[in-house]
Length: 351
Image (cartoon, rainbow, N blue to C red; front, top):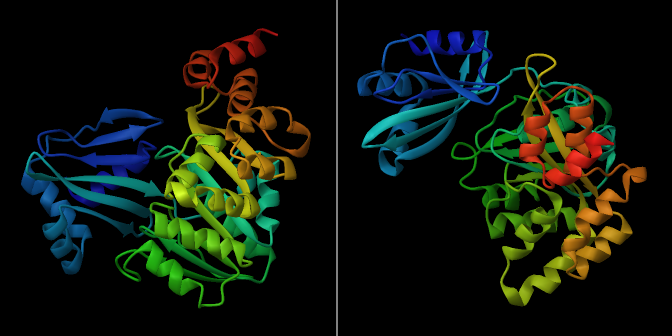
């Protein structure tokens, strides 16, 4: 089966991911579950041909050197894919994630309404966090798209790879891809600060240099959007602090307390009321009380502040999960299995 045929079949199955591994049938992830496709078992040469159909000569050379590589692929009429090529048991394997060609409206993502207010911030750091595949890139793209319809800003995105293609409307949007347009996130971010941006999207704050530059950009009057692979707001704050040497951590707490505007933490659940997925979301807004907590190294208090600040738009993950379960969107078994405090969720559902 040709690569294009596999991608079209995966799309027909509403798959989010396609996995091509020699010795196995093509596998798809449909609403969190891995399932085999109705196709022959793949040989090494089959997967190699699929890779060569997508990768440029330069990308093939880089893969031969490194053994791991991320890039993007577009199939006309269907959409874009984020592709990871890697080696396992001495053979090549591929993981492709579907990225829809159209950026969804922010209002369609089942996020707290307060998230739309974050697109109106003039400066600061906004972080969207969660596990791999939790919808972080989609949320960020929808936020940029909302700004693009309303404001006249210069937006620079630094991505690995470019997922959604964002067309300039009210905003001027430039998208730079790691490995093609820049050598690293930190290099791209350093030079972006000389390109007169209003808004900078950094695909991931994956190292100390990138994190430091992102915080500096937020401190100097830019709105910086980025992601981290953390599951909640307090863990996000601690992860950033822990990137720095012990001697610098008090200074960074003060800097983060001044620049952080919000943390949106997402986790996707399989819906039971209809086909598809829906996010449970924890939302931390940096009020003066939260800023003091960060500066004074009392991040263990963040969950309590979120729980008692619903009036200003904050919500805890467990409260979000409880709400989804009460509305009949997700199963009680899923809700309890993935809650931070299953006993809290169980009590709320029984009330």
